[in-house]
Length: 60
Picture 1 (spheres, helix red, strand yellow):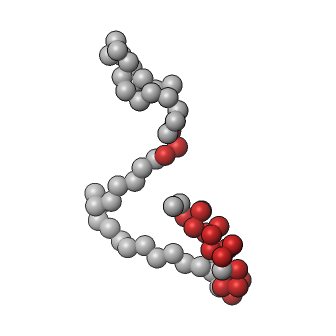
Picture 2 (cartoon, rainbow, N blue to C red; picture 1 turned 90 degrees about the vertical axis):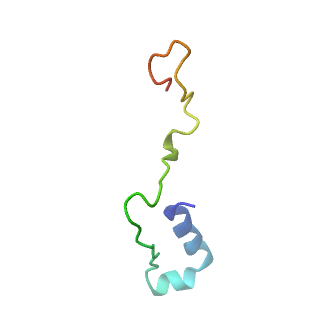
């Protein structure tokens, strides 16, 4: 769930708490290399494997 989705849920589900104070989401601090992030912005944009001729990335 993205932070934006979570904030929308908080505003829809807990309107009284939102109006009383700002909601703060606490995150654990992690060392570099201990956590992975995935960019889903390119999902569904086409093939990601190299084409049969072996040139290029195959991205659309």
